[in-house]
Figure 1 (cartoon, rainbow, N blue to C red):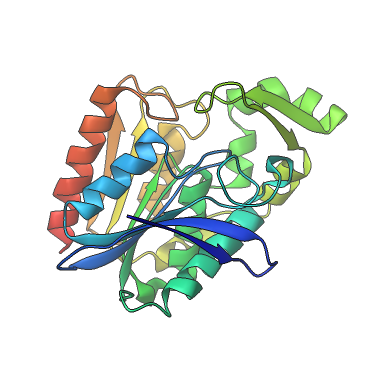
Figure 2: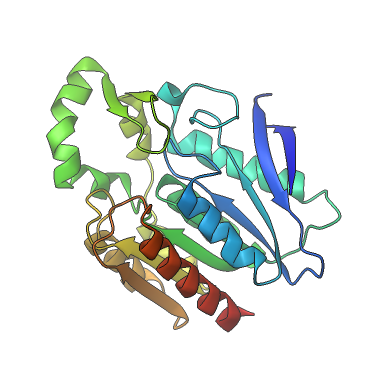
Amino acid sequence: MKKINIQNRSGKKIVVLLDEAEKQKGLAFVMHGLGGFKEQAHVETFARSFKDSGFTVLRFDATNSIGESDGDYADATVTNYYADLVDVIAWASKQKWYQEPFALAGHSLGGICTALYAEKYPEKVLMLTPISSVVSGRLSTETDRHKKIAKEWEESGWHVSKSESKQGVIKHLKWSHMEDRLKYDLLPEAGKLKMPVLLIVGGKDEGTPLAHQQILFDAIPVDKKELHVIKNAPHTFRDEGHLKEIYEIFSAWIQKCL
């Protein structure tokens, strides 16, 4: 596996992990969620399922996250995460291992970014896997989880939380994140998702719940689509049993798509 530093359109460093397959059957891009990073257990699980299926796999830290790339988490938005995905794919398109169509997988905010890309460039996407995905900014505001924090967040301008993935990291996120998120909605263009689509969500996900995933699932026009619920799992998957189940679902689905 190689670690590579590239630059996005703003000149900020993006740190990429590239795992090349010896006999490449495909190419996959894997993206973390808000305040995530490329080494999170669930992100590694997504990547491993593709690698074990013969794919060259690229995962990266978006800027304005808590990984190795540049930027400040406070400034994280759907807009900047999506732009980074576009820039990473553009960089990859100039490499010898690049091939189209490719697979896209993303968690949460990474999920909506990968799906937005697939709606805009459907011919480039072999298969799409938005996991615990944000479906729209509007739906995000309707969750009980958001309603509990929204008033203080908007009034103070900040949402402060502890990272559960990196001990000792306190995350400060500006209210402008929500203003930006409200600009995005997968549903109006979901009819363009004509590639195979796999959705997975935790049964106890309070941020991007099953109800949201079902709305997206129903809006996708293809027959080759699946929606799986990981029983008792929260929004971010950490339990070894949950990760094993996700690996098995991913691996079986990838084989169906090849």
